[in-house]
Image (tube, rainbow, N blue to C red):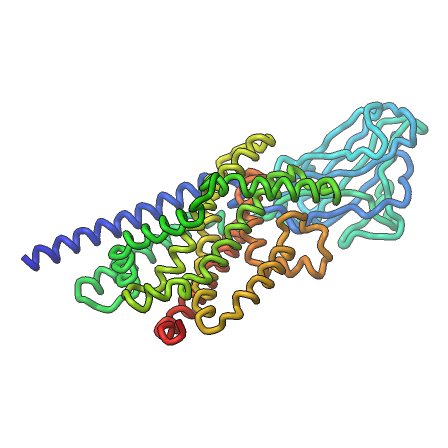
Length: 481
């Protein structure tokens, strides 16, 4: 009978591993579909921004050509733009911009405009159809068939030179720099090797399942097996604790759980009036920008504040009934997670009401929320264990939370921060999660893989630190409660 029972458990374990592997492949497939081109290309950091022009070059009359050489430091050049002046008059004829690859000796693209339709200060933009240029020297050539006194001219800077560039009048070198812009993308290594990475991850996961099967069969110690057994044994208790916390929060409240829906909207209305009217915020689609920051930051704030008292507030249970102590902070975070899901409803309604387009990238929202949940779990484990020994942490945390609120671009754009302070945003965990969420929802595209790795690294680091701190201190809780 025991042999048959063990065989049944082995079959269940194999089925569980198969489901885990199938889930992994399904998530990898959905992620690839939702991420799209953002998995392969990012906005280039080597885009060139025009210097401010001193004056215009001589007009582009018939027989006169302006040429600007520059080094293309991006992997894929998409567009080149040049500002021009009409000399406040109506001109005639056709002006042509040609993009030439000096390294390969070939024309990449050209575009012509009727000078009569060109307006003062207009950017003449030539598109290159996502042309891939591997660090070549390119040139912008401008010429026309217009008559003298009836032609346009590009803007020019006489004293500032672009790095690795040379300016020419009719193929004769001249001092200065043509005012121009370049736009393009850089290749992302992970996108072009995505399936290899997924395959390696699958093999590691398969090897882990085989190792766990070996340990289970021969009754070896395993943290993951013990954790799975505890979750299975106490899943009903966790469910009851989450349900209890959620009900207690809205006990004797007229609106009840509806407050999770209304509260972020009310906060958004107040902050919207203040920052869009008084401080004249010029953020595009500010209501969605503001509400997305409020919803995610409120979840972090509420979960950390509630979970901080998870151990000290359950002293009677802990001293009388045995159960894994980590269940208490975990259940607190999960109960606030229910509020987060309800708060997502007004955010979705606001995005639809303001005309934000729902794209396939929205399938990636759960990825960011899972990373945020892991981060909050880690913070909850740290705070709940420290509070048992050091009660002043509750007051210190309220100050730190307020500082983090103002240090995170929830209601203001990050561009208003000084350059020195803006660099510190990379060390602000909540900024990373909120930025990732806003890119998905507001831009309708997937963040580049680097942002996912940052969010995952932050969440995993804090979760491991929280687990380590909690595990090292939990045996001493009983002496301080």
